[in-house]
Length: 379
Ligand SMILES: [Zn+2]
Image 1 (cartoon, protein in one colour):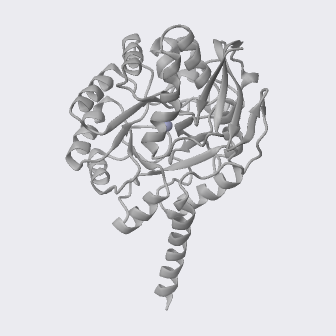
Image 2 (image 1 turned 30 degrees about the vertical axis):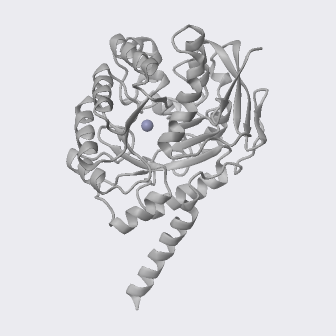
Image 3 (image 1 turned 60 degrees about the horizontal axis):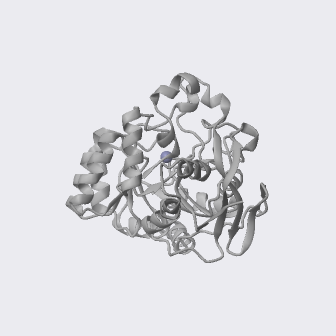
């Protein structure tokens, strides 16, 4: 056995489901998938029902995550297509989340905004978290221009094309505080896999060409692309095989083993993994270096084949089924507690902690504020 230790692996981009989408997956099931995949914390995206765009939406997600999460967590706030809240409310909400997500392209959910509203949100976002962009090539330039204009920190989520990598490289050369993450499916698959994988290869942004994929690997090797994010998005098989199929694929169970496999094949130095799945996301998300008792051990020589049975995600399928990988998570320890050992999840739901601890206070305050406002209106 040849063990690689990764300290404090964080996935900055997941869709755990739960709440009104608990038929797809739950906070408990998907944080189990996170631990099985070697992650000690995950950041949940806001395009949920209810959407995480205001105090009630954030409070509901935090309450249910608090009960269900087995690993640590944070959540992204979503830019509301109905318009930005008051600066005071925005500042309070911002303190309880890891960042603000801007949906500037078609995807799951109801949060798509146009170019004008994207600019307005970039202008008013107070931080401290970054602005995260979901977009295809058409909006990347506008995002970079607006970040430069308003001097804000931004992150291109799931970068997927050679064009986007070249725009990112130029923005970094210009000194902009911008980062990008790439998903395992964009690194491993191309549009040519659509024939064989069918709906299992349908996601936003879509799979690109072989040249796009090579640009993503090159970006990862050169450091232009900063990190790997799974964009874990479980759907039931029925939803996935409907017409049209739901967008998104699961990724938490398989991402680290895929990266170790890539390292074994010489596509990436093994030593880069700590930066790609832990250090860079932690820096992006404003998280301190991991607690020394929070780590993952991966057997970098263990060979296995991905099968539906090997997955902890509730959806029970993966675009990587049949892939022969070299690298398997053997143990995860979270804040000194064994979390995942010998292919078993040991931690109970509710052990996971909110990494943005001001949330509890600020959301409660907002809740009270709303009640008081209502009460004072009545009198
Ligand atoms: Zn996503």
